[in-house]
Amino acid sequence: MDVNTPASMTPWLRPVAQDPVPLSVDEHLTVGEVASMVGVSVRTLHHWDNVGLMRPESRTTSGYRAYSAADVARVHRVLVYQELGFGLTQIAAILDDPTVDESAQLREQRGLLEDRIRRLRQMADAIDRVLDSQAAGIRLTAQQQAEIFGSGWREDWADAARQRWGESDEWLQFERNAMSSSESDRKRMQEQGEALYAEMAEAKRSGVEPGTESANLLAEQHRMMVSQLFDCTHSMQVCLGRTYAGDERFSAFFAEREPGLAAWLAEVINANARRHGVDPDNAAWE
Image (cartoon, rainbow, N blue to C red):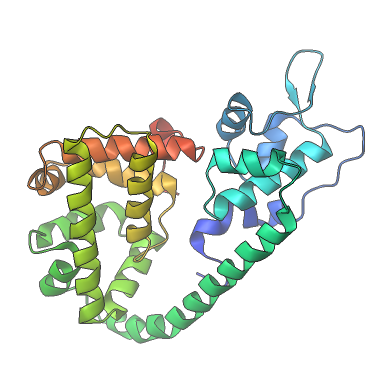
């Protein structure tokens, strides 16, 4: 993976999205053509239309969406803001508010991305040190797993996860980051996870509903926590939620903190994913 290009940023950084075909003033594209150009699904563009975020200004004589050059430009702006962590409601407010200095906001967010790129470059050295160990077949020890996931973590769970995702770039990134972190870093991540799961358990007991602002915040905190080990997209997070709820070993792990917590967390993750344009029913590891 190029350290200058974080994996979670791929949708709008694909070559086809970087160099879109210019449109003439009166030329229009279909929703499928736009989806292919910018690297998102047709379903996502339909969702943005339905929620009023990205409604093409024209329709064909048959009633199909027809995207102008201005529409495509707005799609790209939506993707930029979404990648920077803005919710769809926030993006709509920014794009539709004539008083917002969009250039100033983008410059500020670009600075944050530059900070992230510098951190990724620093990680490259650590990755190089880990590569030799990985080539020798060294993997996380049981103690290292416990330091990250807690004392209740079982080594066979890692084996199950490796069988499911072991061929993915994210799994390689996970093992590299975990192995290159210090003992104190791993313990810090474990303590952070325990604190977050305790907060989630209390939220469930208090009747917090999936899709509410507080539930969405918990989902984002969970995604950011996972992203310390690999770049976790909202779609990947949905896949993790399915595993939590569908695998009795993981369900039991969460049930120790609150009965039914795994299923509740999966619903919270799904609701937050919809907010970011991801259909949980069709989410994939991407």
